[in-house]
Length: 383
Image (tube, rainbow, N blue to C red; front, side):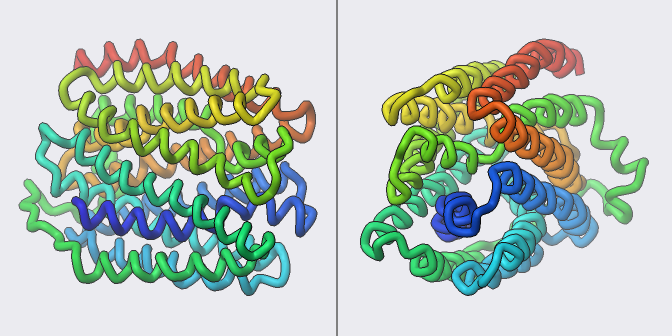
């Protein structure tokens, strides 16, 4: 578990060093519109989600998770040098696309591997631990990006080159430090994506996926947090601080929220996360200075800590052991499509009516999810 966590942390350091600056680089240097940023981010994440379906199913078919995780992390590492070398937007879009394919290949097998390793009574804590280490990387990357932007006088390419190093370290840790457990499945799965196998995932699983999909419409790309920082007048060098504040709040809350969900209802903790998201959206919609921005971003990070690991734990709770890869793949496919829609809607609203329209729409979707969660809670108890 710890080794998997450090793999995620190192890759996130690399990715966030790039992603903390990429929206600003596209808008301020390449002249890309905010709508285009939302579309690119949405397509990138949707690509990862679609790929996860097939990698998760393949991991169930082969009964091996680590091999696919190595391929996915390796592909992500190989794309990192493209960012400093890219001469035009098309190259950045291509690199972002291939990088997300790598994320898709590794995502579902890695999550299934966590579920295979973790004892059932500590599943929330296990996913929380991995999420915490992952998130430490998510705010360490922007911190490094800020320091390097200051040291190099806003030289984007230098930051992108430094980001290559932790990506390859992540692959090395995965290859040499992670051991795949021997899991005795109750039966062999030959066609994980067939209608009969998908039906075996069960009604409770599909209810969890449904509420997660609606929730994702409220949780658009963090690129919009960075653009919100620019709109309140934060200098380019300090814009990645947004992801640092979010990441600290996320990291501090993910493990406690996961451990709490092992002792109380997971849906109760999830409801608290939705309330935090509504509060974050309202603050970000009306914040007029850096202090208001910081509060909104911190609340956004807390909502991530209270929701992301929990959804993974709930999928592991309700999916059959032999179909965990497929279960995580389908979950990521549907939430990825929702993220594409959310990012495109967020970008269109920003261009049309400004940042308030984007964040108020997010709050509205969060409220709808909170209302629907009451019905899901009853269904899960009845199952």
